[in-house]
Length: 467
Ligand SMILES: Cc1cc2nc3c(=O)[nH]c(=O)nc-3n(C[C@H](O)[C@H](O)[C@H](O)COP(=O)(O)OP(=O)(O)OC[C@H]3O[C@@H](n4cnc5c(N)ncnc54)[C@H](O)[C@@H]3O)c2cc1C
Image (cartoon, rainbow, N blue to C red; front, top):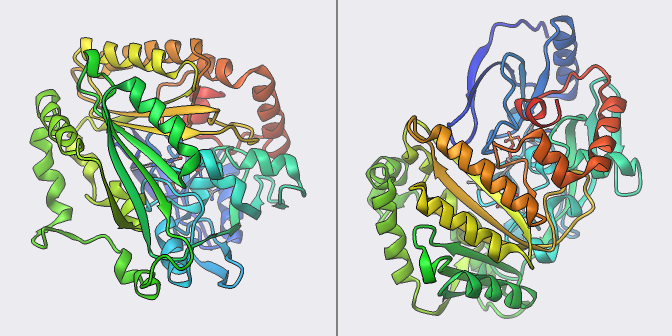
């Protein structure tokens, strides 16, 4: 293959709030990745891997450099339906993976809130699901991966072989090497349905207490938090706690495990194509409109009830409306996710949510989860909770929003919290140093030097946080 630099493309983050022009290449095999590395060296350019570009921030952006788009390396290489072990290329999406394994009675053990992400991107961020407190991050289910280092050397890593690379490339933001194949253990299913308990939480204290108390008794737990109400009802919302059905519980398991039972409908009420829905949402994406939407949702959530739901519907709620992030308008949206110890979360979030309301910049969506710590180098998880807040960005609020999020950073750091490199776009080098610690940063830089002495792999995020 003869490669030339003639494919300059404008790339964006998921929320369309950041842009970075890059030379985009779509390799189809490991040899082509090696050739792209060579081209980058010859032209003194840096390289960033990109899966599906679903990171909310600049993790998969590389202004002025090369974008290594791995979406064409998307084959499921091996699948053993007896053991649930699957080997994939890095561009396989969670969508392709679950659709391949689910009819055989298996499910990816950890998934993000969208099925559009790729396995390479999921390992690099070390994603968590609504079961983080029980199953940990995706990295804990990886049996083996292969990767190519910038030197062209191929490495194979497991939790015992090349252990330091295993625990640092997973969570390493694509800055140490490029995953070329990933072997994972899937989780057994005995039905295509899950049982979901939905109940209201009247305020932040009740919200977090419910998650803390009930997480151990459920497979998954997640909270929706009404970010537009303050005072005594600040933090009110709805908790969804859910469990997989056990063996023998679903008399129609053969039927419910079929893909036709799982697919999200592509029309609303059977009429309106969902692909158009984000245009209709746009007029409501302002403080007043969203206050109305949140209030209506809260009132509807006051009824405590239990229902059966397909796995896809439970896990991928955010995929119901394709391109929903476009409804935020031309400035796009960003997400601010903070992870706080269970002892300090309530006080810190009370201060942050109150500040956002007082300054007229409420978040439009708040989601809470329960977490546990893990052994990966750039870990974001801890024994506590996370709160993800989505903010609309406009020309008018860009700088005041950025200022407020810096104040949030201070509150989170003082409360012993952490951040997630797939989400926040404001985290500074100083903030990262404070939550990761000097030792972790030194270890990451040492590994970076060992795997990539010429700093071939760099992203906008890397320059912002570790540059
Ligand atoms: C609607 C929505 C819901 C989400 N819900 C969750 C959630 O519940 N939990 C959660 O943890 N995250 C969640 N995320 C974040 C998302 O899971 C991560 O940002 C994930 O990394 C995106 O995967 P991607 O394939 O799009 O990767 P990209 O965004 O393209 O890239 C992410 C990182 O991976 C690197 N990378 C990509 N491919 C490779 C490779 N082959 N080798 C080495 N490095 C590579 C990139 O350089 C970059 O640093 C959500 C995102 C969205 C948009």
